[in-house]
Image (cartoon, rainbow, N blue to C red):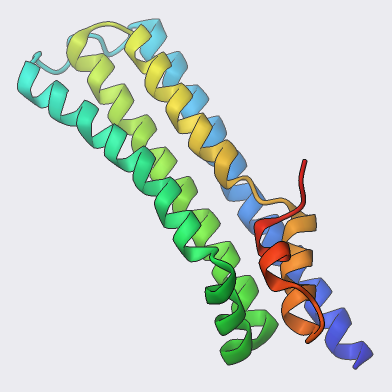
Length: 171
């Protein structure tokens, strides 16, 4: 039993670090895109098309709301409990990591679309708005190790409350 707990804790640390690094890299990527847009370096590289710009704005809103819905769906307590029952702690940690990285990639797409919109409009300040949306999505998917450990503990303990653990601890 001690070997399993040590293995689970090691995998938790490894997967959490990988997810955290992905979120950090996307955050840095977003900030760099914001700097590029504000510098005006690529301003006017793409001809302005109001229909395309508005379509991209709508896509950003759709992706932002979709990221929240996707994460909430993937992190439902009963779903996580079923994954832990079928695939064990390793499968549960894999799901947590994959979902976090996927939401971070959605934030990267939002940042790229924001840069494209700011290039089309010639206004670097447009990227500020979309960069803030991307960073908000990243903040929402930020992996807290204590929450991940609580989910693993709750699914391993029969007596634990997986619903409370899946929702995390109050900040």
